[in-house]
Amino acid sequence: AQRVTQPEKLLSVFKGAPVELKCNYSYSGSPELFWYVQYSRQRLQLLLRHISRESIKGFTADLNKGETSFHLKKPFAQEEDSAMYYCALSGLGSEKLVFGKGTKLTVNP
Amino acid sequence: DTAVSQTPKYLVTQMGNDKSIKCEQNLGHDTMYWYKQDSKKFLKIMFSYNNKELIINETVPNRFSPKSPDKAHLNLHINSLELGDSAVYFCASSRRREGGTGELFFGEGSRLTVL
Image (cartoon, rainbow over all chains, first blue to last red; front, side, top):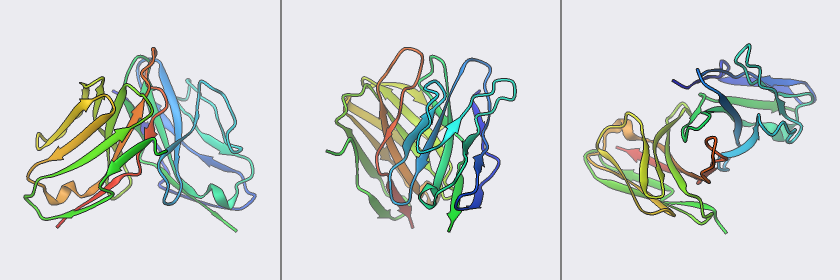
């Protein structure tokens, strides 16, 4: 079974501070991990995926298979980063994308 | 051009009624999904269709019936609505690829309120 755990429901930081949104997963096969973001009054959209190894809007995430984690990090948070962040998992060859419960990030001025 | 569009955006109805939500995508994708987002913002997959064929059917009451007339459309019909059906329903689509799910493109959501 595919399972994604985001332990923090809410996360609040000040502008310019580092931010880390935690994500742990459980999957017996080869996982594909994603971060999706939902800004206020906007649709859910892909932020980044582990296979592309990109930095998007200053965010990075590294897949750690040993710790079964895919934490999202940004060294200096901006107010416009305030949003709902979802970690998601798909198994290799699977059509099913399973989401974590989400973390609401608030970046204070 | 809107990529994934859902109608209606808001729906308020009484318990016991039957309602439908429609979804259309103009991205040329093969796979479409319905997700339910509850009051705690938890996103749960309900159904997935690939080229009009049902490929994912999570444990959803059979009051929920998806229908895909063609690969660009996936509608959701709900019979005998209950209070617990109140949620935001998101439609999404993706291009099928070897190795699993590609990027999902979401609609804006349809907020259903059952009174």
